[in-house]
Amino acid sequence: MKKRFFMFFTALAVFLFFEGCASISKKEQTVNGVVYDGDNQCLSDAGIFIDGKKISETDTYGHFYFNRALLKQKSLFTVQKSGYEKIEICGSEEISSFLYLTMFSCSSLIEKSMNALLSGNISEAEVFLNKAAKADSEKKQDKSIVMLDCLILYRQKRYEECIKRLVEACNKYGDESFVKFREKLNEER
Image 1 (spheres, rainbow, N blue to C red):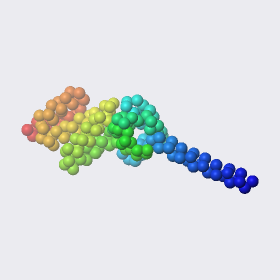
Image 2: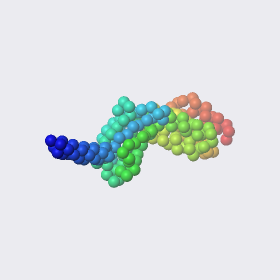
Image 3: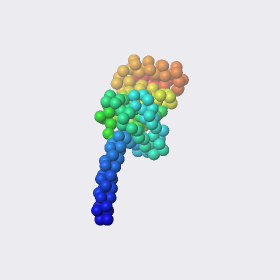
């Protein structure tokens, strides 16, 4: 009886050991992640893509997961949501088993651009503005982006380009702020 009892527990221990190894292996085959916005709030409904094919989407809490086997050595992993900057990671070795990702909204990027411009960091302002323009796929922030672009051109003393952009904006939007900016610039020249 003792011998059977001992053999049963030995077999059970061996089984549990190998089952544990198998579950660790399965966990390593899954990539888990969470996506936050610039304010550290969970970002739901962001699409998860590998090589352009949608494979998943973030849930209400910003979580996503997928099978690592979907990744190839030179795969392009992308997370995107309308109104937010796109995240792209190239190469499967760059993707760990758990990802913490932050996506900034177009309005956050415009704000970062404006702050950089106000602090005198024009090159940083341009970087954030370019990201905002890419994030604004629906052109909801187009007027703000154009105005900020004009301000950057003005600060860089690229007056001809600035005036050209302002004329285009006046024609496109008919917005009084563009007209006033153009008049002020013409007075200063």
